[in-house]
Length: 457
Image (cartoon, rainbow, N blue to C red; front, top):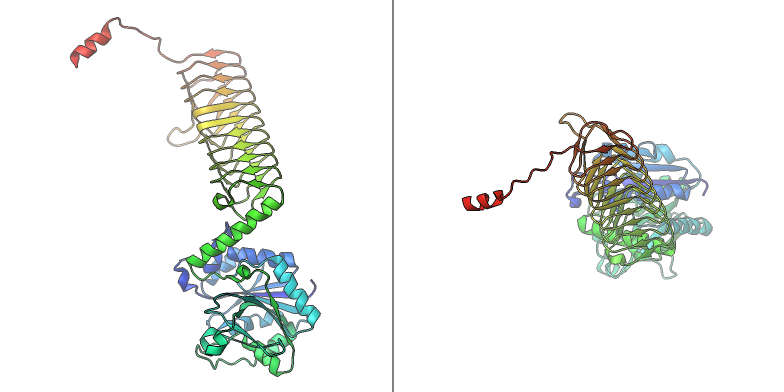
């Protein structure tokens, strides 16, 4: 879309959020609400994106640095005044300017694209994105003439009782002819109950100057929901979450119970993967095809290849290769690679470790800061002792090695290829290839001694 500009309003204090964080930086489905808007505007093909900042301006500027231009509204004098601050960047250009609020993350690309198309095709000076709500309390009403054209927009606080009966509301999103916008803004007055310069007053001014005004209703009124407090944040989360789940299901993912599955906006899932209830997929997680995830799996920034099974486990910042199995109740921490057809079983903690093809850590172990080769078996209760109180050290377990139950491997140490380590051993020296290492006291039996112990009781 050529000659398309955007102004995003994000200068307000957002006091109803009761938060130290700027309102537009609060996440919806794992992504700050302002990012939903900016990413969509980029996808829409906008030539220039100007974000109006004021309260906590520095935090918003830092977050969006390099992605948008900024204009400061140091005094909060209304939405019209806010848009005026972008004049040095946009005034004088031919084209269309899209104006949006930074706390409305639910509009889809299709809705905005249709708004811009409708505006251009109609030849209107301005086009309002509207919604029809069952309860429009608090919203500005769109007042139409008898022929259906738009006459004006009136804020709820300034509306008459008759005007408040109107259910069609202004969503706060507009398309304007860019040159006409700046001329009309210069005529906006603050003669109202709030003493502010309202952007919707531009509609009445353009009307009086003889320019046509259009209105494009949004297909789904839920898209019009803004976020002013934590209750509305949760409502936006519900709408966005359902939208994300529906998209994945349409692309061939089975989600057993959508009401109990949480998938953030940046997650990618391949077809024929099944997501079971209680699963939470976050961040930059990428899941391949034919996987089984859950129940109750929490994956964050995880790369999962095809055919993987993960149940009742927590994994973060790692890679799980083809046909590996994880869980139940495994904990895989950042920097780990679970190789093809490997197994990390119940109550196993893995950290910053690579595990080779077909290697197994089936239960009750800790393997941290280690390199585990292919075909390795690590028995129940085995531990890599990687921390000496000051520094972390690495353990190397080479291909086809066998580590028995309850073995302590005191790093730095290497278990050679094909070596065996006897159960109960504490290993603090390297074990050569194909050797058997035993590091424990020889068993001593004292006949009848247990009877003496019982007599003392």
